Length: 354
Image (tube, rainbow, N blue to C red):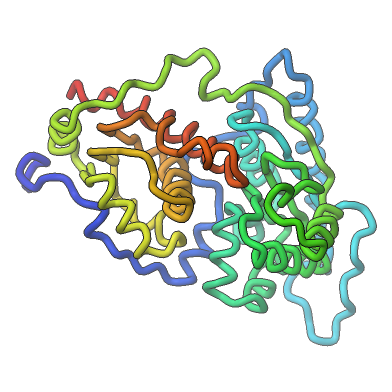
């Protein structure tokens, strides 16, 4: 078999993956980065008691999900009585800043819940909306309605339509006895604040927040706690050389990749990276507009989930987004992307010395 130097790196821009709906459902599990996390592997910051409290509350929440499904267990019959709507919140909402371990705790909850994996679902907010787009609303309700638990990571309301869609979906799932858990950087009653002024959307948001018990988690971004600064960008030559020397690496021009992302649906960004061991990018520069920036955020999430290091030349990752973007309604997403890409850049640094 030819070695890496003979075949050369792959190009993400040359990939146009097709993802069947069945794969979207099957992949609703914690990403590989969180395969082995558990509550006892979470290291609470001694100076932040809310972190230890979160572990206690979530452990109890998981234990409470060990009984029969609230709708009676198994598939519902047409003549079965409708499951009573719980009077208390049927979920927990982990609110906190970037890198305080919310996803670690959410994945730990998924692992700790005493139910077979087929009865638990874990996905990001974007992946959930993509699932509805692939299956349709009613089929999504039917698919997830028999689950014991639905975990939603990075709950964001970036589009008015998504506000109504997800509110309706979760309401239907709660009616069928599905427990909910979510993470976000915004309290559930504040979702959408600063983005939409419509009273209609505020009503939707307030109704959605009633399904969750807010659980605040304070702390600093662990990705920057005691870690060195992100490495400075490398030269184009260093990046290209590392790409050719690393088996399974991809090599793309950053502006070209951004253009390619516009032609691939975000639900396929995970498949776009299938089999890739490292992403090498040349000529990284500021993202030109909001739509492009939001697509890059999704790609950064998928790369981070899969622990794929990112080696780059050009500007540092904290210069990707303009001040206007970082001060706007999507700032939380952009800061999350910067944090995650910075962590992946650290992981990629050893590739240059190969």
